[in-house]
Length: 213
Image (cartoon, rainbow, N blue to C red; front, side, top):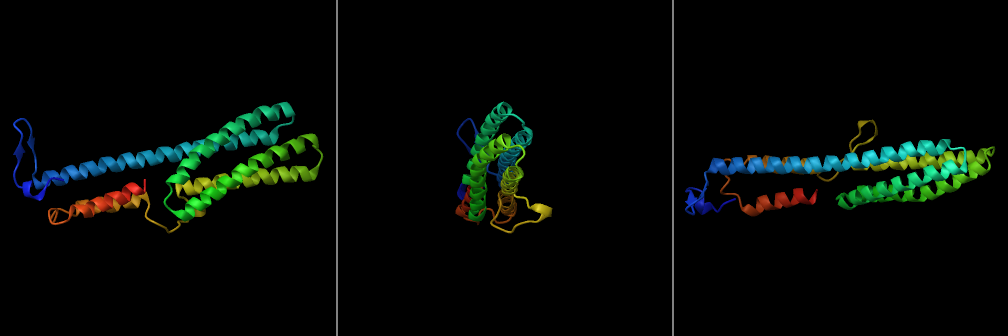
């Protein structure tokens, strides 16, 4: 925003006239905030969709692994599964680092750790079932590993998408959407006292929103 002393008169450098009308400043600020909001929300949605798509690929490959009947088929599909898990781990790792809520970050780390350990357990359990197809305990163990991995995958998605089973919501620190909305409301409420509010107040609000992204 321009200095207070220059808000009541336009300035010219000989070629460009700087428009400093109060309404123009407010309108420009609102347009800028709206554009920034759309970009941040869109970027967040894209990341969430990438993680969900990666999870879906992992689930589909897991279904194939459960049905394999030969070592050759298992090796081929497990190789694909490993690549997909690496991609999922990479995407969720970046998301975990971006989380500001320490509780969610800890849950994400725990779920990702379970997935890492279960991947090796899945390999062992599947190979055991292939060697001993008539062993009931081997089948039970294999089913338990697959089930645990699915639970961990869903937990990651719940944290990433900020959703809860049965529509439940978890109270916690301000989300990016809440932060942007509050900042936007404060900007729009400056019509009467725009030039009385210290610039640092707006800067601190904007920094808070940026920290949430």
